[in-house]
Length: 142
Image 1: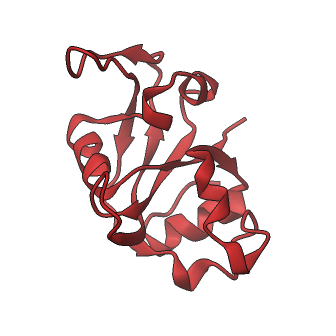
Image 2: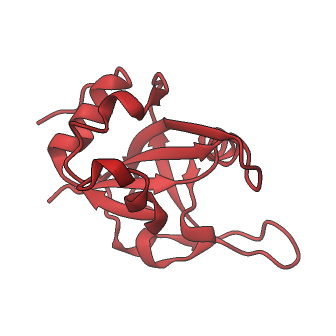
């Protein structure tokens, strides 16, 4: 059964992942990546423009499908070897979250809409994913 995921990362980190055709979540932890399956969908939400800076961005910034290759580690630096998963990304338009908040069911308390994103990576219902994808200009098959 296809699952629909949200990953949370700064815009600049998402852009790097787009170029490399990979995703990393939760600061390189393997857990969520091992739960993903080939054919699952992933959309990235970027709360900030740059990692480590508090400049808000608040957009869905990338969308793609998880590929069959199992999660793997990649040595990014001498002391950082995060887990990755290959993703086929699609050309999409970034979408601000604010116009979608009232419609997204995974956001239960609309006054604290940012709370779910603190998990870093989580599944959502197909209907929520479809709303985000359509807003980004992507049609997913039934």
